[in-house]
Image (cartoon, rainbow, N blue to C red; front, side, top):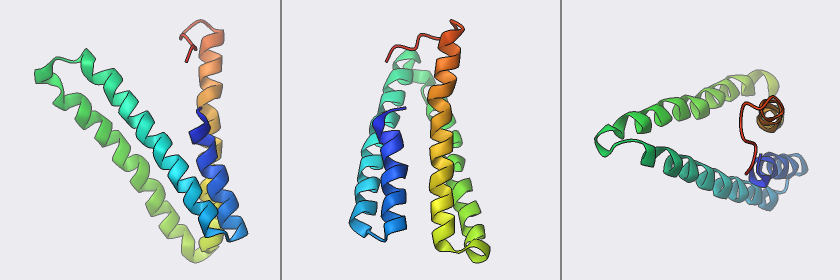
Length: 121
């Protein structure tokens, strides 16, 4: 987990909870930079491994996974706003993002401990 992964929800959560829009914007900017760099790095890692005439498949696979990954939480949040309220929904979403983000390094550590992956950055 990079500092971008944890800074976005923490900064965003703090901005929302405190009612400070500039802090919320800061979290969005940090998250955008982190996501952009991560996505670009993933694509730049995968695409050179595929022949030029076969590159549509990996791009399609990335987008088939990424779009529901953003869309489904947005739909769930939209459904939760009426019963839970906007603030509770936003803070709950941020807490869920933090929880899921914490699973990445935990999984990497466990795989590295069992010699299944190389955990070097």
